[in-house]
Amino acid sequence: MTSSDISDDGYWTGDDFLTPWPDDQLQIYLVRVDEQWAGFAWIARGSYLNPVIENHYLMDEFFIMRKYRRQGLGEQVAVRLFNKFEGVWEVGEISENVEAQVFWRLVIGRYTDNHFQEVNADTERWLGPVQTFRTP
Image 1: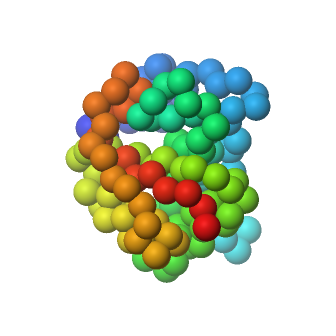
Image 2: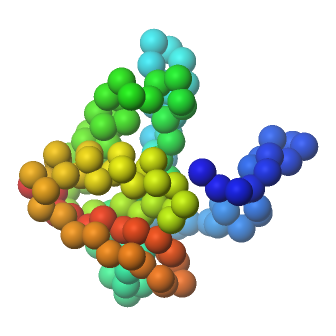
């Protein structure tokens, strides 16, 4: 959820959105439901809160198509990814995207039995709420 418009070529972000990542620091997952594309997730290494930390996992991008939302798919995908990458996680949301904040607080709360921290980040890398937790 941003205020960006979709351009004539179908892109909805600026050129700076797809900044290059080292191959070993970004993994992209595509989500399918009944052989149809339903969403994606980008898992990155690093930290929104402290740039010198490299051994955290970031839910850098997460998207489920609206027609597949509110069916448990997003939570199922998130939990599978949390379990796949054990350690410390940071999940940040755009400040204006209240729906995403509600979703992540609920999913992370259930996953961690409410053992997570939330801060309002204002760093070079991120501006907005960030939930931090360690996988059980």
